[in-house]
Image 1 (cartoon, one colour):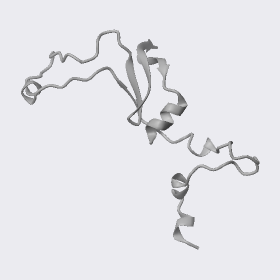
Image 2 (image 1 turned 30 degrees about the vertical axis):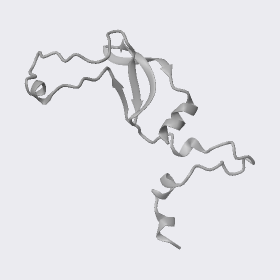
Image 3 (image 1 turned 120 degrees about the horizontal axis):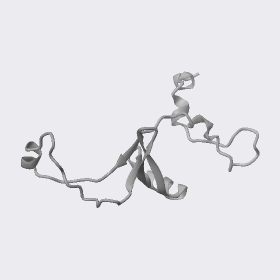
Image 4 (image 1 turned 45 degrees about the vertical axis):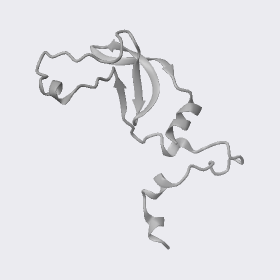
Length: 112
């Protein structure tokens, strides 16, 4: 018996396979990854500034972003663009309403 057979993290690195007893290879057992946490981040815009200007920033400074007002935010999961959206307020908290979602096929392509 190898030591990897007793390793509980081993399943996380094995490819997903069809569920036992389904009879076809099209039903993936996604249950094993549904509780894996991912980082979701929103990008309002970006700016490139010289270090000289960076060192001059203080409270109240305004940095102009490359994105125009009213343009959608980019929504990233683990650094991969998955959608665009707009800022909303929900119960005194910021949220995002998705306006355009990258297709599942395109998301898989971007992961490779």
